[in-house]
Length: 377
Ligand SMILES: Cc1ncc(COP(=O)(O)O)c(C=O)c1O
Image (cartoon, rainbow, N blue to C red; front, top):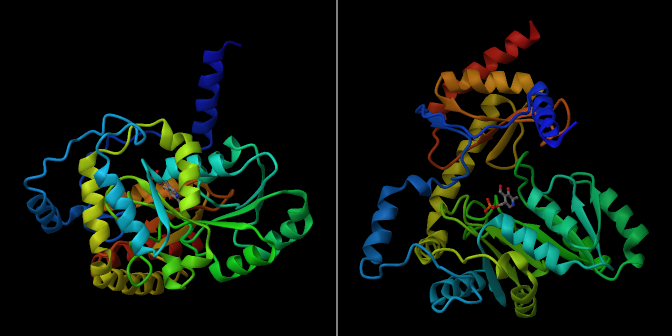
């Protein structure tokens, strides 16, 4: 069989499993978008944009950096953003990457070497796994949020490796459940491991100043690497890592996704700086979001630990048909399918934002209640 036939077979197999992904060209207007990561509603805040452009009126930031950070002649904006983030976290250093994906992939592949072990939560983001696979380190995955399992692996294998990296998300992107960061810090200390926490879905949303779950639990300084993403609650683009000054210099010299890619456009960097500076001011939005999540999950009868709320449906095809049904009625909710999530746990992933109001969510809850009643019958 020639290669083309193999590619076609792969696509046919995906289609038969209701798992063929396509880029949407759907132009329909939704009443409510429940699939966005714009958790604070900043990306549609016209007043915020206006005040940004007013402030930058005379700056005329370029739309391209035109070279990688290492070759960039005027990287003042990038540098200023890193200083701002490092000082917000009261940390030694910060390094900005072009995306959260490039950050995890570049950092993990640079850090871990052939004598090292990576212990990653089973549900960490693909970018962490890709970084681990690119490194020469041994990768083992502990069961999702199962710290007994993690400790068994540490007990058994810690002695065989030079460095051990424990990798977790704080708020998990698919289920919205939250890691026990205190416990992870204790394990890291006991077994002399590095702790790497991806806060992509918590930055902006959690913590008094919007720095994430580690800020909320006063653990920022107990963790070796903190990763955040600008493309979610911060309504921008890019990723960053908070680390020691030594590690920053190491990454500048070894993280290939940093070294060999054109830096983010200065206009984006200026916008990100503008938003990060205001993070503490978005407290009311954070509180509104928290309140809406509690009310929504109570009404729907599901448990939630964050503003990402999974609604388990079962098969891929059922999740797709429920999502299509909701879409027809004006609610954009994406189905999350196997193999992204375990078999028979295909789900709808509700992603609530500070702009959502319970009143407008109630008609959707009613549709879901009807769906449940019909399933029982
Ligand atoms: C936990 C987590 N980390 C990293 C990323 C990648 O971030 P970005 O979209 O900026 O590449 C994502 C994106 O979905 C994510 O969910």
